[in-house]
Image (cartoon, rainbow, N blue to C red):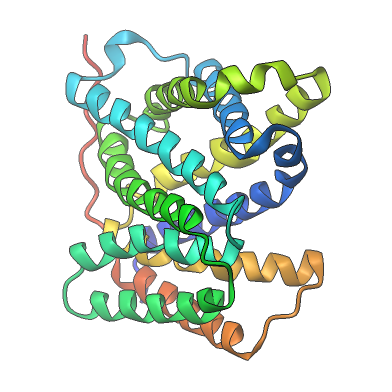
Length: 288
């Protein structure tokens, strides 16, 4: 029987991935107006403001190690958001997703033992079949951005788990998201501010809730209940979710190989959920 905590963690992870794909689909119009980096910056900035209002962090709520890990998490959060958006602007989404998944896959392989490695391998095969990267563009700049996003995503998984263990609830996001917004502001803010108007700002606010605020919160909670290896393997479900949304919302019919890939990643995700239960780590007490 699947342990209850592993089942809850897997459910949270799947909900997060669904929000991500819906958020990406909804961001297309905004990206046409602000560009890839500008869209990422606006979403991160709104998300940072929202989390500060919701959590209202106190200086004494975090110990030094959690603050340090939260700041690093903010840097890699900005990195994965900016780099992936730039990759999608240059190469097909499926190709970018396949390349980006190498980050979580590396975490899964490095942290897995025994049967868990088999689930990671099955997930890798499924993602390749699902996305058919050989059929898309091979723009070297886009590939470089996707691989950079993969590296940031691997670090994001490990740091999210660490920050989640050091703070209660989603309080850790009150450290990481403002740092991510500052980093994104340095990179894309000056070139984007002049293109903002009330309608764009309101759209950015709505998108920030869908991506990244809700997914990041769900992932932080999921990583309290799943091993990093299992979580990394579960990330293979994201391209399958994207394919499903494309089928149901956009009427895009998958070919035979992508259909086989969906079956493979779903099986890998189920296997990861069944074997990836994590012994809960004690939450650090707030400092006086």
